[in-house]
Image 1 (cartoon, rainbow, N blue to C red):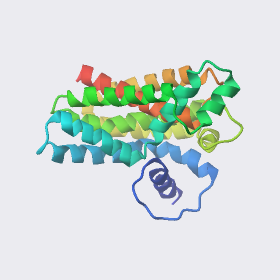
Image 2 (image 1 turned 30 degrees about the vertical axis):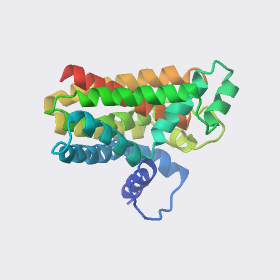
Image 3 (image 1 turned 180 degrees about the vertical axis):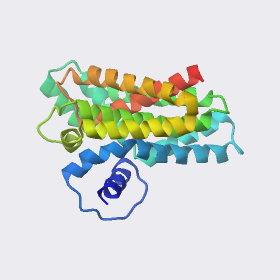
Image 4 (image 1 turned 45 degrees about the vertical axis):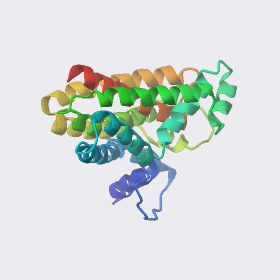
Length: 247
């Protein structure tokens, strides 16, 4: 029962899909529920892939890619993109650790945030609009899996940089057990959809997630919810780029 509860909780928190169920949850449920983040990514990716198939009957690839990116932002509520912007504003401010954390908490977007978000979105568009037609559906299904797997990796191997905050429960209660569960789920998803190539493509986002988490967390001696969001978006770019090159 707790598995279903935590899966639904992640669906409510990580997407805007309307699931009007009142759950009695704790901070532990948020952290341990992150093990199911790759499944949430597959749900998002499945919706994107189905939409793209229908759009293909009406629009060229370039237009369809723009609509898909917009749909992705609507499905996620811009949650991870917001984290990406806050992370760029804070970490590239060249201030002290304490000041970086203050900037990241500020809801206003600065120049670095705008540049970071714009760069990610334009890379999404560039790769997706030029992706081979026979591979685009699989890539759309799996890039959100790669992104949420990165969030899981970041939460499970890091400490929290603040005394409190939205992401604290994820970091405090997401450990190696949740990481192993998430990796197993990801292996199953990639292997089924990509068959033999799946495991090769899975290694890339795992490695890139580890590197990205270490690079972003070293300035503030830990991660925040914003950094976990940034890792998600950056890992998705890496996965789409590698899919474009390798497939």
